[in-house]
Image (cartoon, rainbow, N blue to C red; front, side, top):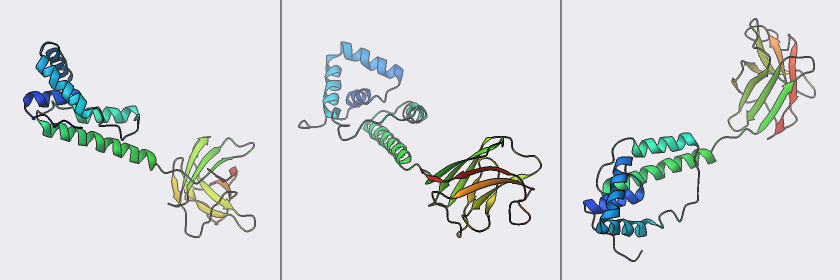
Amino acid sequence: MTESMPTPDADDALAAEYVLGVLDDTERQAAAQRARTDAAFAARISVWETHLENLNNDYGTQAPPKHVKVQIDRRLFGAPPRRGLNWIVTGLATAVVLLGLFLFQTDQSPQPDLRAQLKSDGSAYAFSVAVDLDDRLLEMVLTAGARPTDGTFELWLIPEDGAPQSLGIFASGDALTLAPQVRLSASSTLAVSLEPSGGSPTGAPTGPVLAVGVLADV
């Protein structure tokens, strides 16, 4: 920009707020009507448009989800805007921070490392499994069948040789914390059995096996 910034008097502030879109509907309509009949005020708007037209050139286009835009609109337009350039700077800073938080959350959303679908022929039950190896969390979701009223689900790791290893009891949507000695990977076999409340009393499956599946990389 080669021109000097305009003097921040009341009309300049109003013109800047109009260009930035921080006026409420009534104020914006009044400013637009004035610009149609007041050449000097229209010129101020034109100057601000020139100064601010390259403001977003360094940023790519990002369409936030509807609920994020609603929150941004509420933060920007929920209260009548204050006059003066300080309010303009505050409004811009708020919008940039909110957009930055949204982009950070979008980019940093955790993704599971392993997944499996557990089911078995002749069983009415099915489960979805998602494993986060970094946080050592395993999420179990009941996708078919009803929660038992006289027992509990228990998840087992079935090694190629050796006894089944309990990974814990759960209800639908529970996240199990994996013990340090548990090692899961793609091709690990998991099974769900129906056990008495509190889990298997023997350390091995005692009830019917409801579903079986093999973990795979996401």
